Image (cartoon, one colour):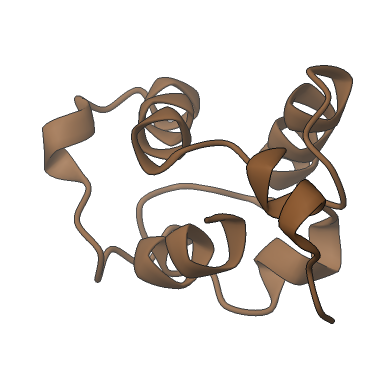
Length: 82
C-alpha cells in the first residue's frame, strides 16, 4: 500500500503512537522501545481495533487493523504510521 503526502501528514506522530500505546497497555511510555513486541507487552486484537478507531475518529487517514496486526512490533508501527 502506498501512502500519499496528504495521507502521511494525517498520520499520528511517533510520540503520539507511543503515548497512546502506553496508555492502552498501562505502561510508562519510556518502557516501550522500537523492538517491543506489542503482543508480548499485552496488546490484543481488541486493543488494536480500539486504537484504529481512536485514530480514525481523530481524522488520521488510512489506518486499519491488518496494517498494524501484520507486524506487531513498535518500530514497525512507527514506520508504517510515520
